[in-house]
Length: 567
Image (cartoon, rainbow, N blue to C red; front, side, top):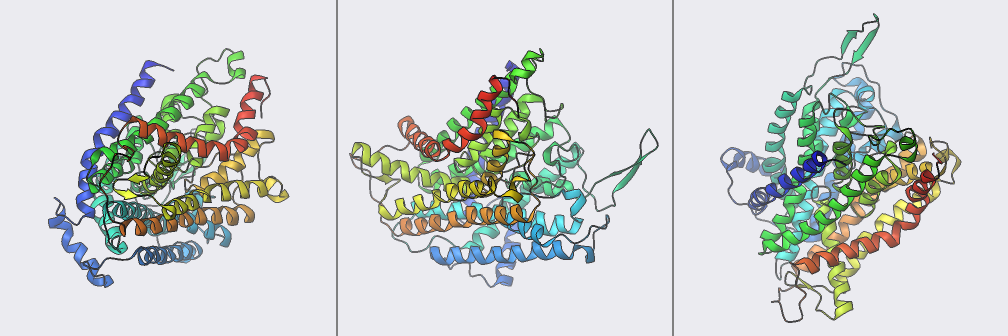
């Protein structure tokens, strides 16, 4: 651990905080339908899309209608991706002559990208055509990210509205998010990445002659356009198998730093959107404070663990820390920071192999996802996930100290608490349930590259990543099998949509309630006490739920490492 390392971490946090207010201000205007500086150009396009789709701008939707529209939208996305993968051998823009993708892998990938998980049981450059990468994956990256933000805004409207039966219009929200937020930023972002050395071409793969006279095929393609939205939209699906550690997908230290900023930018700004819409920006800062405490704790542990290395490395007097599985151009601090960011934000892109981290260094990314990926979280998903925990914290505070269970003028009652618990319990159901099956089912066990606690962590991480819609892989697990393609797909589907439905039901319930003024019994929700309460509730729920599984994996592996036993 070095001063320059901590400087990078502090600089990163400072830039994210500086972006919160301007982005939050702009996104609030977009979702309130107010005029922005892009309106003269994009407003005619927006109106034309509504006309083509038969959408009435003035008509809002009940929470159930809003949710059904979202689900039907994703059915279409699934069919597009699945069809492209199965038919890509017959379609254009396939210079490498990629064949059709197997049925189970196509099914897994289609579910993965409509759920914003982007788990990849394949190598992109050796499996998919340019058309599939662009029309299937990049296209869906925009729409799944826009969906997450739209759902978060719908839940925020539930808190901000009074005595209303509607929470917005899904078609309008997803259109405005794509047109006014995601596309403009990604156009500029992609040009920056090209400047940094990232390919953006429809040309064929390049064949080079090595110094020994051999032939090497260098994969290229429309990379920058996909990477821009995969980071900004916290999708994570890489164009190349090596993801953000590939020099064509993350060429320089500057591109790496900007990619980390883009992962958190919109998710952090949504806290300010919340504060603006409920009429008190301090509420948004308090929620960002909860996220910040958990994030900084995770960064500190991971950086410390990787900088200190392992007992074996120290015995060999290799005291530079653990560089296994990391790119030299990024080093320990940027690799550790990236790992925490990508798992705190439901992104899933990786610039280092988490399988090669130390036991405790690899545990923090795992724990970030298990907590519900609410530490900034995926764009939108992190915000509505955090609001579920806020509801629980308010309820717990009411039980402990007799405070009136209220939040931003809305009384928290049995229905809201039930919906929050229903959504949160989805995570352990899928993570622990499928992990238990996988570690005793012989075909699944055969996919594990390591024995002992490390192998267990590989399986636990896979189902944690899928259910949490993160998409990063711990590594060492052969996931492209019939068993894992189907079980991981079910985890991704349930983890995304079975959490969304209770959250939208809560939005509808809150919007229908009257707003009440704060009283002497109302718990203040803008100060340090509230931040500490929410952090405590999150850690207690996560600890009680997942500590036994963590004890079987990374914790026991760390203890074994200190006894010079490696796995």
